[in-house]
Length: 401
Figure 1 (cartoon, rainbow, N blue to C red):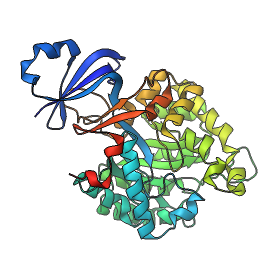
Figure 2 (spheres, rainbow, N blue to C red):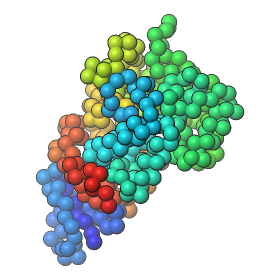
Figure 3 (cartoon, one colour):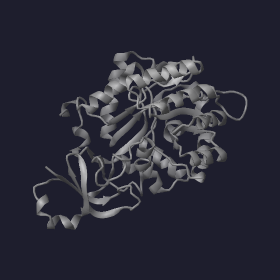
Figure 4 (tube, rainbow, N blue to C red):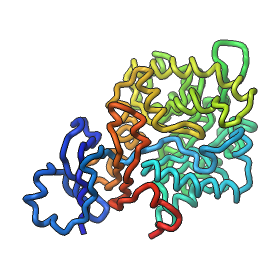
């Protein structure tokens, strides 16, 4: 049976701009037609189709979060401590976050680090319909040096041989991509850059060479000019954070086709939000990064780096988009960061990211225009996942199929 989504305004993320009074026809979970709404009256073959009436709403591709942490997103307290929680606690966190992700219209997420193989398990459970949640791309455990950043969720490895072995272990476990912790997080040290490189150039190259030999994409946590240069030399696909990025490095990103996941809301607003109770020392360490974050993002915009949207552990999705616009990105480009750019960064352009014939029918219905107001991305009325329409309140453990 076919489904017809009647759209008040359709933003298909194909550079066509918003279009009024359109309809999307879905069959077997995929988009089979995009037609004018007036044409429906002349289509008796669609007379018995199920109708999703979004005729007074905005419809766009399902949102993509390229920086998710199912096991510790949206939690109170120091996240480093949370990472080291017990496996049952982390699993319960992931159940909660899978449900809330889909309720927010995130139909695809890239999980950027979880211990105990939890992200692989959730990828499998969701894919089999055992748990409601978004499509999950997972790296499993990132690779860091001994004692490196976020080590409770990482495999700690030193030297190219150990790093290559660690990467192989995650590829064997089913990793969709490989992530390295190329630098520390903030640290109060002398010098202009309040961070430091952690992985050596040959270690990063070993990790990425192994990933690419298996046809997998590469990702990183990276801050600071030295560490950014190292991941670019090694052939990274997506840079997360990228604080202290300068014009020369941004130009290299453009030339190499590297995407930026800036995590503006997480680092620029929420990680220092007292409501998250991360502590005075945490705030003191992170405040110096904010000017570097803003300067880096402006450099990326000037150069024309492709931007994608990611929340990390603390960010608010719509706030991230709002901050992109505050720092110079155009409104339409900021929505591409949530859709077509994000899909391309993850190697999923053939499946999701735009509303086009042949793509998976992942869409979100919003009560308002996110081009005019980015916070309308939070006004989710209906989530459509592979053609199945759900209201946010209906997405529960009881909605299993």
